Image: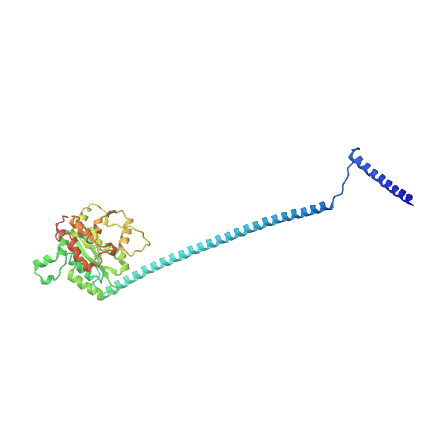
Length: 389
């Protein structure tokens, strides 16, 4: 049994060997290399396990890097969207601010237009009341084009207000020649000597007037008080203008248009009632420029202008002349300071044309100080009479 079994086993082995030979022969025919035979070794399980683990780790690494790149791209996109929203918000906010400023500008223009309309209506109403009551407070301008204007060298307008009677009196007592005061109580020679204002007009062609308009209620207490003062001193020029501090620019414009229609002068001057003036120096200074056809003389100032409507009438006057072909003369002697400034210049022989305090745009407390300033800075009573025109 054992041999039989072995034989059978051997037979099986031989048979298997023959089959293997046949298989190898076929492979040899295909490879076309008779003396060579390949042997396939079995792969160990550990190697397969290591390959699987390596493949898993490689896949995990690839997946992680891919997801991180995708997350970075998403984050960058979100940042871009955030910046775009911020820019759009700022643009809308800027556009909204521009719209607000536009509305403010339109409102400001509407208020100015309404202010002008109200002022015009007030003037028309005042003129109608005056015409109805037959009041003669306002200056009547000549209607005929053939009216002959009165010749003069200079017309000096002194801006004043209803509440400034003490200021006017301080000027009459110092540098301004007085008019016909108590003329009925004096003998003719003495009366003529006291009426220096009229004499100055005839002999020198120098016209001086306090410039004032009328109140909002013509014929009222304020207008009657000025009428009485004008009848006493003969030194007022009444304008077709409603008095008001915020109407100084309009008052200045009406003043110049009024005096031009009355006097044919070489110069027209505007001064305030809180300024000290030396008439002789003023006239002699103007005389040096009488050959100039178009000239604007004054103490020039500069600075930022914030709007088209100015509270200071001097700024308005200067802006009006910017667009005109006039020669500007910066005369610093027209803006001297009060003592000791003007006093030292007078002692040195450089008499000032005008003196005032810059901080007050005039002499601070002018009623109390005008006489003292006149005593220290005046040119002398006879200076204006000695100027050869």
